[in-house]
Amino acid sequence: MSLTDWLIVILLNGPIIVYGLVRSRETKTSADWFLAGRSLPWWMIGLSLYATAIDSSDLVADAGGVYTLGMSFFVINWVGVVIGWVVAAQFVFLPMYRLGMYTNAEYLEVRFGPWARVISVLVQVQYRTLVLGIIAYTLYLVLRIVCAWPSHVCWWAVALIALISAIYTALGGLKSVAITDALQSVVMVVAAVVLFLVVWNNVGGWAGLEAKMETADPDLAEQMLRIGHETVKTEVSATVLARLSPEQIESRLLVGGYYDEDRGVIERRTPAWLVSVAFLIVGLSYSIVNHTQAMRMFAARSEWDLKMSVVVACAILLVTAFTNLMIGIMGRAIYPDPTAMAGLDEALQKPDAIYPLLISQLDLFAFKGVVVAGILAAAFSTFDSIGSTLSSLLVRDVYARLMVTDQDDHHYMRVGQWLTPLIIFGSFAYVPFLQQGMVLFYLDVVGTFVVPLLTIYLMGVSTRVHRMSGTVALLVGAAYGVLRLLAPTVAQEYGIAVLPPIMVDNFASYPLSMAITAGTMVVFSMVAGWQPSGGLLHVEEGGWLRASQQQVQAIETTQMRPRSDAIPILLSLAVIGIGLVLSFVVFW
Image (tube, rainbow, N blue to C red; front, side, top):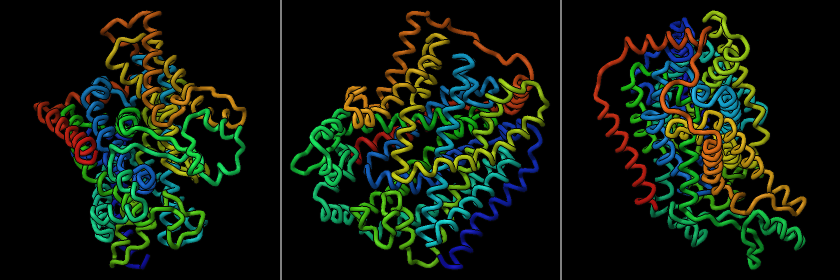
């Protein structure tokens, strides 16, 4: 990185941060801090949704995931997130918006009782702080590889970035975050396109990709460039397998996989349709469970703005998912094996290093600065988003609900402000667990805890399952997820199969988790009775929670604009159609 590159990084990000600090002076009440006073227009929400969805972990970690899994990973964004945003805006979040709710967890008490609400907060805190930890580690990789700084210097720089994010988020709340997100999204898109065009030209386009991959492995191009190809994962390498006894090999096979004696490996093969279903569920989980998305939609100045905002986010995502994630594909063509990653220490030779490695090889004037500026913008946009989101959940759904119920408005805003830096820096505790692959660790967490939560949201808005079924189903679904994670260790250490092999499979676990959670709710309702239709099952009776809801309901009423719902519905269907065609026709 030259002085010119660093000047570009500062000039592209510095004014945005300063502007966010200036606008933070407009934040006077908790409604301003948590919901931007319900004043955000559709285009700003859409840009903020995109900026939050694509952070530095999506650029760096997802490129590493695509390096391993190929184009099947695109289904998460092209289908899962896009459909999830539309379903959230049209069905799941709309009744919450009308009731003046601040968080998506509040709905769960209305529908399923207080324990479902609290469990939802705990899951979201665990799930989203993991993402913050991934962002921190991706920033470390970028600085370590692109700048070649010592490890300790890189970590101090990451801490500084986190501190800056925490300061303007704590001062300004959602309004500052949404404004800076919208501006940072422009930097992110430009930077991603710059890197894509440079690397695309270097590999010789699509034909060059195919040629390079076929040279390395005749089957590699088909595996990487087509979503419709089965996914092959080496569960136990030849090196490890050579050291195992026949009994130990049998123990490894208890959780599934195929022992290829000729090659000396244990592989797991998953059909393309099952991989696609799993990634669809991952994307839905992000859009619906993740309160960083709900919080922005709840800040819309009208229902029309809420519905239209996802069209903007989806349209940008459809394009940039290709430019962002293709970096992992092109990186695999250039470096078919991580051990071939030139110039990296052995400890850094892993799929997650491919994005910063390709940046480090840019030799065009000032281009490296633009790309690094985009990565920092992506990091800022999600550090601040998750910090404000989790603070909102903890303040409203735990602190004000269970601990301190009736303080003045200023008190709760201050608690939210102080929680923000604690959340951001507390997430660094995840870093030691991310060394072996960020995306795979993330997917395990989603499958274990987030998919059951997704299921009860969908069942809650679409069925009359019993009120108590939500908490029971959450516990059953999470228990299955934990048991699945423990199954390989139990099989390896004790030779006991605690679950059938199909239930241990990473990809099969997503639809199975949904089926187990939903089935538990149905069976419970068949025994305890179905919930009568109509009427709220819980209303905040008093204190700050009730007063704050009434405050935003009044704002919504005065700012409602009568517009046709046909436009956002038709455009939403169009972007969903484009995502489906790209995934299951063009690249299948």
